[in-house]
Length: 267
Image (cartoon, rainbow, N blue to C red; front, top):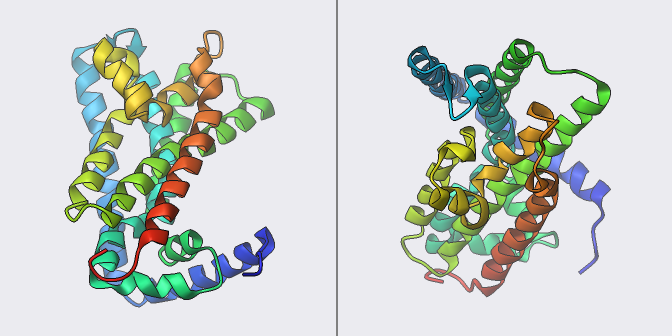
C-alpha cells in the first residue's frame, strides 16, 4: 500500500470534517441543546469550586484561583479527546454489528479513517469556557505573561491532552476482546473528573495511582505547574510531554493491534 504523507492526511481530514459539520448543521436544535448542556456542566463545576472555597480559604496549600487555573487547564486539555476522538464511543457498536469491517478496506491509515469520521463540535464550547477560566485565574494569581510562558502553556496543554486520548483509545480498544467493554471505557472516562484537582490533596495510595497507574495527574496537575508554580517545578512536570507522547503511541499501537485482529461480527 502506498505510504501517505502529512499533507495528504491533512487535506483529507478537512474534507471529511466539512462533510461531518454539514451533517450536524442539519440538526441545529440538537447541536444547540447539547452545547448548552456542555456549558451548563462546566458552569456547575465552576460553582462547586466557589461553594467549596466559601468555607475553606485553601485546600492543602492550594488557593481558590490556583485550583480554578487547574480546572481551566483540564478543560482545555480534554477538548481534543472530546472533539477529535468522540467516535471511540461508537467503536464497540461498530465492532459487534460488523460495520467496522468497512474501515479495513480503504487504502489509508485505519485509525485515522475511523477517528476522523466524527468531530464533536460542542467540545469547542468547553474550550472557550476553559480559556475564560484560565484568563480569570491568571489575572487573579498575578502570573507573568511573556511569549515564552505562552509557548510553554500551549506545548504542555497539547501534550497533556495526549494522556486522556491515550486512556480513551486503550479503553475503547478493549471491545476487540471484551464484550461488555462499555464499562471499561465509562470507568476511564469518569476518572477525568479527578484531573482538575491537585494530586497532592489525595492520599499517598491515590497519588501513586493517579501518577503511575491511571496517570490523570498528567492531564492538568503536573504540566500546569510549569506555568502556575515556575519556581518549584518537579521533574515529573518536565517529563509530562514525553509521558503524553509515549502513552499516546502505546495506545495507538494497542488500538491498531485490536483492529488488525478484527475479522467480522463477533470478533
